[in-house]
Length: 219
Length: 219
DNA sequence: ATACCTATATATAAGCG
DNA sequence: TCGCTTATATATAGGTA
Figure 1 (cartoon, rainbow over the protein chains, first blue to last red):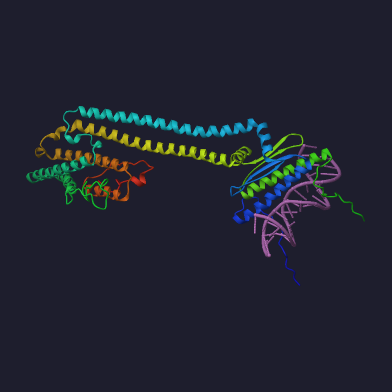
Figure 2: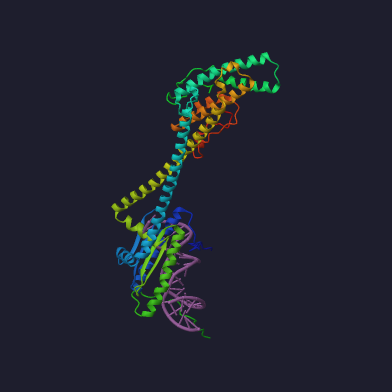
């Protein structure tokens, strides 16, 4: 008669992180109690003081202390203040260093930013002093949506006239291909300006605030 | 034939203070290392943090810590008083928030910086072209092909800057998809203008969100 | 999680160098 | 104090309840 083994008995396991969560939990419980038992025995056998603190995978705290965790920690901390303190200070210092570095970086960027802004303002000044500017030479980088719309309209007008002029020239002269192509380029580009869409459509689907309203076509 | 036992093997001992001093010392050493080994295994197996502090009979301190005794004690001490714990966590969170904020600030400044730099470059361009193209103040119906070509170039330049400005405005606002479409619409109409595209590189951190597709035939 | 079971892996008491 | 050995005491993996 074959006897079925009641148990496969203890198996050797590699000392590495246990993958199965529930399995790990069981092992943790067993070994934790085993550890505490060993500590307890050591206390009794040798009359020493021991404190153990364990943070479980679930962030729970387990502690063993003989006589008490607190008193042992107290003794440890007051006895080893230089170590503890220096380690802590190192960590603090490092963290602060990071922040400081960020701040330094930030300051540098801000300085560059200021310089660049000053430069831009200077250029603006120079341009302002120029008497021959067209209205649209005005710093259009400062234009708002309304101005942009006006600009668009003006450019359309301009374009129409350019096309007209180009055609006039083409008709009246024997044009060579390269010139033709050049004009063609203009012309084709001018197509864009054609508007079926002059309307400033703050279309209903778009927000009135952000819709540039150039419709679908143009600029 | 009687075989002499080479050793009597491990003997059971009562868990009570070991009387013989040297004997106790030996046991202490052995069991201490055993305890630390068990702790180490528990750390590895379960991925937990453990700190052990032992005061030997000779008042010497032995400690085991993974990752470090100090940090675990710190955690333990600040966690134990529930009030202080939350306070500490708040402080930590606040500090981390500060760092995050600094980073965000930095990113914003960098973006502004980039924009301002681009603007400065644009102004340079304008200034440069201003110096050489006031010729087109003249009634353009008198312009020849060459002048028309120059006009086209100027208009392209202007267009680029207008687009840039439009994008600047868009970027400055919280953009949503409909806005994106709107801008895209603008681009598509402009196709006529050939594009080498002075690309507007929204800084790399925002490129996915704010890239208005200057690469694809827009404008 | 906790307790118990079995079979085995480990820790360690004693003793020696 | 430590290393090493041997024989044995304990701890514990894998189950089940």
